[in-house]
Image (cartoon, rainbow, N blue to C red; front, side):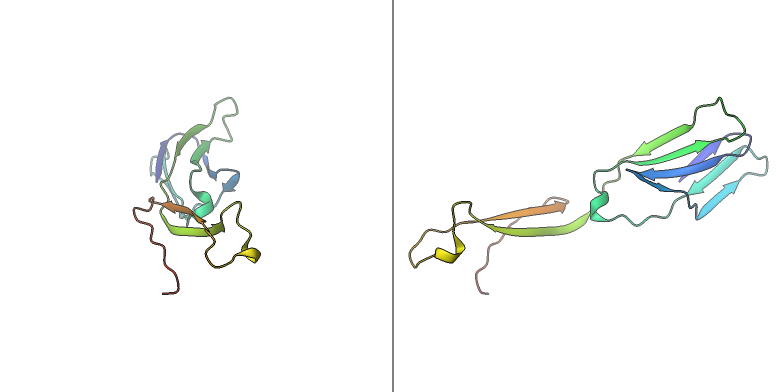
Length: 122
């Protein structure tokens, strides 16, 4: 939530990376008209991790004034996503009994995983 003390009326934009969110589900101006409170309701996805969320307030009637800007880097949690790869020199169509094989498990997660378990036909 952002509270901005400014007269005359302002326009508030929220941006996340290259996306602009102009929809304020809640925006309220005080009785005196100099404080505007705005909330953005947003459901982040994994692709949003590591991107800055920014609130920008502008007054269209004051063209020489620079916009007020505040930003934050949300810590977006998501479940681990794994991808299993054969070893670089491994030819999956030419494995024989007794061959040494190895695999790599690429993991993307926040928070980071603390335990990795390998299972075979369980």
